[in-house]
Image 1: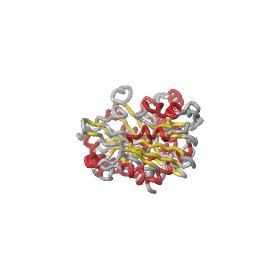
Image 2: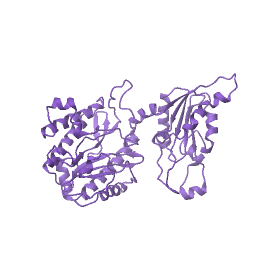
Image 3: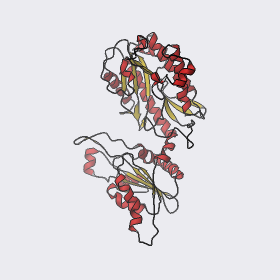
Image 4: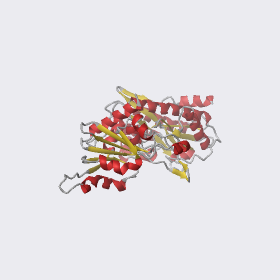
Length: 439
């Protein structure tokens, strides 16, 4: 589907959910400076990109209905500038905003105040998407311009201001076919990255080298970005959930946890695997690993349209609580452990999140009545149970200490069940040991 058509459909879906007298303001990101005249690689605000496809800095989009109910899409952006484009790359410019990105009309971003005054006339409900608050200082003035500038006997327009996320983010939870394809591509690149790290893993290699191995492999698939900083955590480092230092040497006898995902075409993957540095599980490592995998597989089996979101977490906790009791790491009956939630000592976190343009993608987990949202075809999310036993946990047998084991897969809800998009990264103990033995 052409880009213009895809984003036009998304804009139409959004506007159909809003009152007829709505005025939508979408604010794109600016490019950030790293040092002096060196800038960070630009990445657009995801809500802005989702509705426009426009991936340049310093842009604002306006959406409202015209006299016949048609959607007017105004795009304000940087004009063409040959000198700047030689140095920093081509711009769509005013003409390109219309011809390439489907804007009804387009203007120089420098004319924002003037265009806002001429466009925001009779609309009484303003919806704003400005993640960084770039125009917070102007929003009230924009909304009051008509009321303050009109004659005393002219009808006044008193406006309400509402965050657009309330209406847009629920739409983003359901991924259309193009989004599913983009996520699948990012996941496939990440599968190659995880396999490459698994092959390279050994004792006395630095975590940073393994992180770079992942990046090299995904680059071969066209992915120049990661969806989040790689987490490559050996031994006790894995007990820090968002460990990013990646600076330690691996040691024989340790487990390695790698949580890494490519970003490709602005969509994210998010996969975690845990395995022994030496390629062979000890009895204690295997026991914890198998317990986490059993919890993951039990939760994945629950994924079908109509299942409530919280059932995934509850299933993981039930499986891991029973296993931790059987291993002697938790004391008391199953009923006592569940009632006291003592399992949380080792399980620590929730077990999943939406996946899309953001790795922790937007959208509610509850419906309008406050009930847990039910799964629907087109949803994509992670399931990622984990068990963490820090080295300082002296009241458990030493063989279990100093390891964090998390396994995470990316799951698509289908019409009749689910698809595990990331299952091709070795998961079972037998698969891991066989794969690592091949080197």
